[in-house]
Figure 1: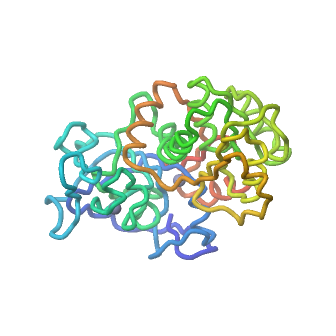
Figure 2: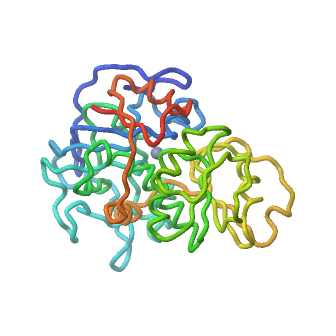
Length: 353
Ligand SMILES: [Zn+2]
Ligand SMILES: [Zn+2]
């Protein structure tokens, strides 16, 4: 299912099976999660630099082949000075330094972060999510809305045992990004989640397992969404326009609505933080300084690091995180995207390949 131009639905086309290059894996895709970022790509709010492009960055599949060689000449794989340079990562999947790449037949996950240069100041300081030369799966690199995908072996994760393919897919972006947002909330005891979709339904479970209180905010009158949040154990659920029963230490905004920023600030305790978790947001309205006063902070989360992935995929089975998925056959990708836009399901949409 291929993106060709902004404003046009994805098109079903037949392509040759992609050929893996050096240090790349050929993956038979079993499932691919649908993400709000894909809507931003479709709508032109986030650029797809070189269409046509196969979207999809929450890929679960099996390794069925690999490229030959150890990296084409000139390919930067990272060589920081001293040991432990964050950019130098090989063979993460099997664990251990220099371990072989994932074996044929093993199950891997492919996230949004598809490549980093390994040598820039961000990569060398544990912030590869900000690498200016990063490439992203399903935007710069063909993704998982397809039977086959090719991915750099250094950017694939092992899928935790016990998660079927469909349930694992949402962990790879909704889960990872949510986890990074939650970490940015520090030790906050009372956390608001604005927009109770794929990410929030995972983050709420992690936050509750850590003994925090969770307050879920949905679109106005989304009784089903609020009921879903309560079933997952949140302490309170209501409309995003409502004032929560307690002041919050932190809030994460997953909905792409800039108007929620001043709303969330108004519900904060002194010293609280508002974390914007999406890749795009509508303009943020002006607001009085009073809303920022008392050391309120506003931040954003961009992309992920491989360390986020390792930490979260280690943590998820221990919580244990349960993902609620609505499945669509691959050829119904456009329907899944429109249902996401319309808020017509709870939890996460996953394409079954
Ligand atoms: Zn995503
Ligand atoms: Zn870099």
